[in-house]
Amino acid sequence: MITFLTIVFSILTMTEFILGNFANGFIVLVNCIDWVKSRKVSCVDQILTVLAISRMGLLWVIEIYWIATMFNAASCNLKVFIIGNIIWIVSNHFSIWLVISLSILYVLKIVSFSSVLFFYLKRRVHKVVLILLLGSLPSLIFHLVKVSADENVWKNECGGNVTRKTKWNDIVRLSSMSVFLVSNFIPFTMSLISFLLLIFSLWKHFKKMKKNGQEPQDLSSKVHIRAMQTVTSFLLLYTSYFVTVIISIWNSEMLKNEPFFHVCQILLALYPSSHSFILILGNKKLKEVFLSLLWQQRFQSRGRK
Image (cartoon, rainbow, N blue to C red; front, top):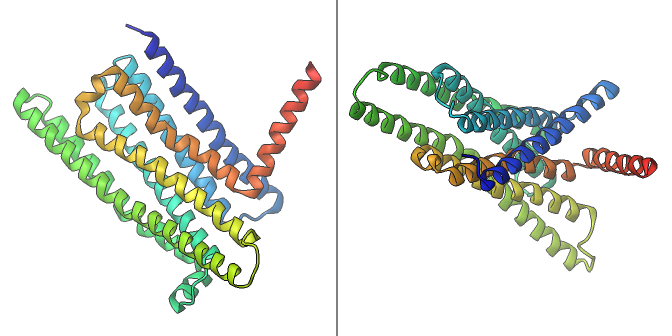
């Protein structure tokens, strides 16, 4: 039975899906056009482009799962469920690790410490990002192997008794949550460390400017603050996304409660959709194109009137 609350939640979910795809598609389109024109693309633009593509995949999986659940077809085909799960795992993996790469890129380019190791990493920032992404691949491969093993368990237990199936489901659920926790704990910790380094660097910069009798509202301060805003927004949004995924995995029975299910879907889609707008506003090139597009639409609407 469709209630007023269901309609409201459905509108919110669809709005997040549309806005999220618009923001991520905008990032991909602008960077691709810029690459075709200039025949070169910066490391930041490369990360943002692949990140936007991974988040579009994440949004589509969330939306398809929501539609399937609404029409009671979420578990109608095990093969479809496994494929959707694989797409979600790959999209989620690159979504978080590319943001971590972006955070580390900001730290190495903005922060300045009198350390030989830090100076060495700063000069080889592109290699550091590449090694970081390649180093995360074993975690992705292990997660995909885990999904394949779960598929075999579900197939073998399909004809078993209810008690045995329940026990296997509990084991699969617990192992899935453990793998998700481990694979996301390291990048989340790295993002938190990046945030703390940015705060410490900004504090040192303010202290130096105050000592020299200068106003701490220079270009370096603005760059620090902009990078901190991007990292902070990621930490807050991903925390809500992370907690929602853990609750969904651990207690799938709660998802049968319709209001709770819709709230979970809204929180899941909030991270890949809203953070992309923050990335647009935090990037000078993307922000200029985005604002010019808004002004153009505004003038066109005025002309029609």
